[in-house]
Length: 118
Image 1 (spheres, helix red, strand yellow):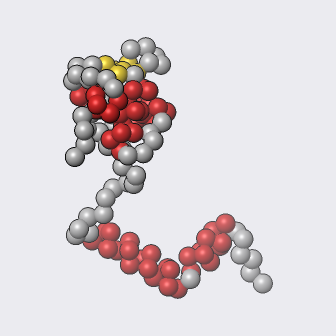
Image 2 (cartoon, rainbow, N blue to C red; image 1 turned 180 degrees about the horizontal axis):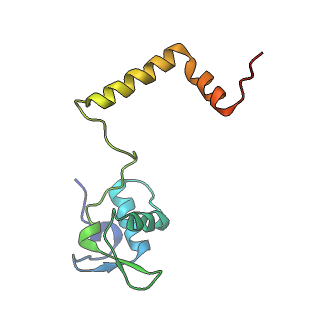
Image 3 (cartoon, rainbow, N blue to C red; image 1 turned 135 degrees about the vertical axis):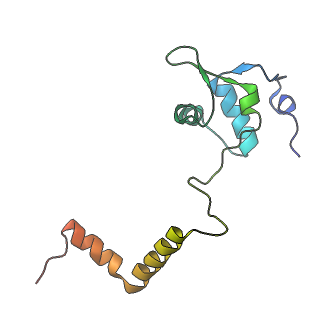
């Protein structure tokens, strides 16, 4: 079990504290177990994944309550479902067919115009 952030970071945080990018990056790094740069925190805020308040055009502030349990995952995209839908099964079958037949690279070369008829 993780210890409280105030013990790890040397600061007593309260839910209503407003944090800057560097402080949020340190908290997310502790939560995620790896280094999270402040630039990525800015990206999360821009995409709307992490709620923030814009104090000026360039300065973002975050509430501690929104950040305290946020974990940045290593994997992007949607998680694979335990029971895939019919469209996912169809795409998997198509990819497997292309892998086995070796036509995927030929199609790509033909599309790029690299394959010349002799």
